[in-house]
Length: 264
Image (cartoon, rainbow, N blue to C red):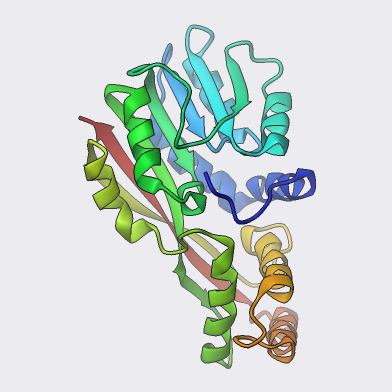
């Protein structure tokens, strides 16, 4: 798994805050419903993050089941392990999505949220998912297409160039449209695709947009190509959004795509 952003302890805490917003809580409910874990199931969460989803899964599968989370980030695994400390049948470990260290045909279900867009070899990851899933096992994958972002702006060309620099934090910022072919090649039958919007009308600091917008600006300021988007242009974008916040004109919309597949 190749991550462009280093999920250290500070960034892990930031991710934990995002996961507690109403936007992402609603997404988590939809993902949990799509995964549909049952009592005694063994479920794997690839890219466990702060562990909120795995905690819910663990409660649903019960003590006769097993809930396992893996992540390449030590900080994330530590955070998830703390959240799961009082659930004996749940655990988290550091592991690569393309090299899952579990027996073949072991898990009843697998979920992977906002991970594959950071992975260099998506084909290898999905084949690894298929290997550890039982035949008929359910796989739910959620990823974002950053081409879908919509913001209120007076200069669409400038904003487009700004977001194309943000895209560099990912291996593939436009992955969802390619996932159906990856699923087929890995031996899955794709049974459903849903859009999960991250929509914010009006500024709200404790929201997905409220946390992500400052992070996006910070990344582009530090790592953006100044030949593509200058500091003056970044400052103009930020200034415009600040004014829009004040007069209830802030608007942010982004599509995430949830794929539901069954192992053949």
